[in-house]
Image (cartoon, rainbow, N blue to C red; front, top):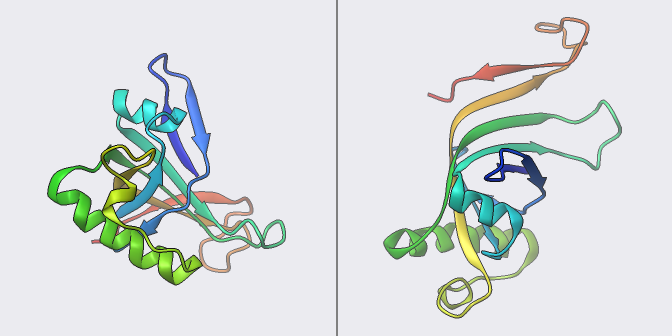
Length: 141
């Protein structure tokens, strides 16, 4: 899930399929007229939550993150589409090319660069549990 904020300060959350190379940079393709894309143009701050919604309630692992996002252009666009294309081909067999995300195309490529990560600690975790589920900030460095 991708969380953005309207210019009025109201939050907006939307699901996006993303590709990542390193747990810090996340890429996705969206319409520049989508609410989250318009929000990013005005306020680049994002929140991201990743979890497996297909598991039974109480069984999911989760990570929450915050950072800054932007529409990619110039040299960054080629590097970004390489990351997105590779993951997309692997996950769903669909490849992506630059012409699909620039010029007159209806889609653009975005990247979030994450600065903070939190993981879900289940209340019943044998080492870190507290009786209730909670988030704990982690450092990747």
